[in-house]
Image: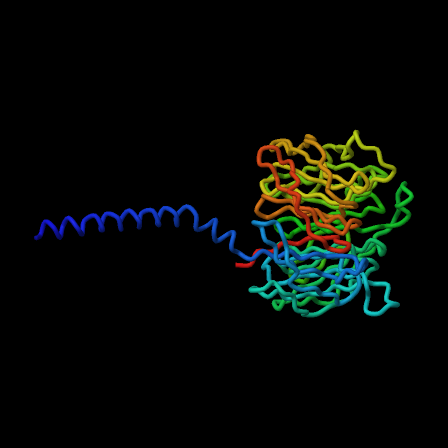
Length: 395
């Protein structure tokens, strides 16, 4: 009797133990990935208010199918072309080119709170940008300062961020002066402000006067000092956007008018720049009458650098030497549309999304691990006059 009971129970016990072990292995190996895939992924798209664009698009992005669903559109003013996420992921800042009224030459900066479940935006407050045609907005890594660049105004402005995410009235407003040799350089054209990783400095690229200016940042009152260190670039090059390597003491400037990339060392003590080299962006195999470099980004691991060109409508891909910071061209990839104004490097390092403004589409690429080359997925998202892409993962 006891033998029969033992014989019937023991196999069930062994089966249960094996099942529990299998479940444990599956949980150990696959739960983090599954959780990462199930996290809600939101894309915020800035646009020009043309071609029936509805302003800022809030998209629910499906990473598995590489598709997107529109959750919300926000159109408080005309032309919300550039966006910036707060480091906390709780606030979004938008640079609208429209001012307080049609006669106001300045733009407007609008702060939004982000619903942490849906990704929806709700208005917090707004302030004058204190300059004409704001074309770039960024937030310092500590989340205390918003920086704004004005293309037509040729000036920069800063704003204090409150605990609620609201922005103050402009704190610093600094007007640049001068010109350079290109027909598009008859006056200053501020194009971007990129803060250092510690928030001590911000690098202002002025296309109109061929200068990168390093401003010291006062995080407490959200101001910048009025006597920056000035780093001139080659006349007629037109520095537009700037990116700092996440680990190495190097930085890269995309130069719109000369279609080149400037390579700099960054002094870790004082943030000063020293030009190492400049490298061509254009493919010799494509002939176009018009070319204008636009955006520049590093891969998440810092091994690859990408820069977009309007005209050839492609991405230049470079390998970053991890010792010298110098670049080696890997090739050019068509962006799958016209006028790639900006593009987004996926925070997971898997995808690259390009906003092709004149073809009203965002084209999705998958990045090869070994070569850094973005491969077309055949997937795209239709958004009228798409200019800028921001990405947020909700927990």
